[in-house]
Length: 163
Image (cartoon, rainbow, N blue to C red; front, top):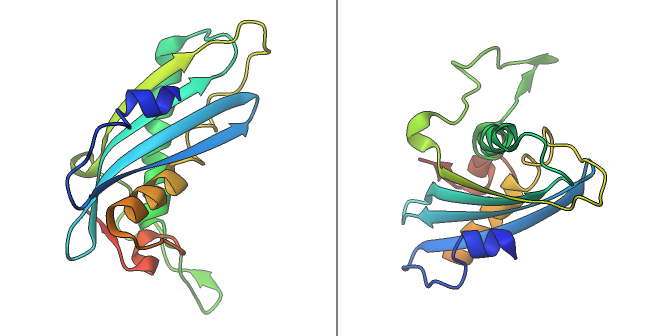
């Protein structure tokens, strides 16, 4: 609910734009992310915003939690959109960022993070929870915008490209 509220889920989006949500209960934390994307006629995907809500028990260092979520969203989006590994003759073909790209600043979405607290619960993890919800949130947003399901990653394997 917190992620949906942060993302203004109830607001109508223009044609070609959609929101998708995903949730993770893991590493002792709860995290939800809403991705807002637009998809062009050429199936070019732009992730405009990712709204995150996290409950990790007691927030010991809120600025560190925000930083972990910002980095985790970029890491997860890089894997979902660009992270293809190919193998030829038994060897991985990618060797560095020139042939294994990551999301660049111009492609990075706005990332909003809301920290919820449950002081009665044990302190949960923060490093891993931002990553897993990114791909399903983006895939669900693409479906909301286009009606097309993303069945394979990276996005290019399903005919989409990140711009």
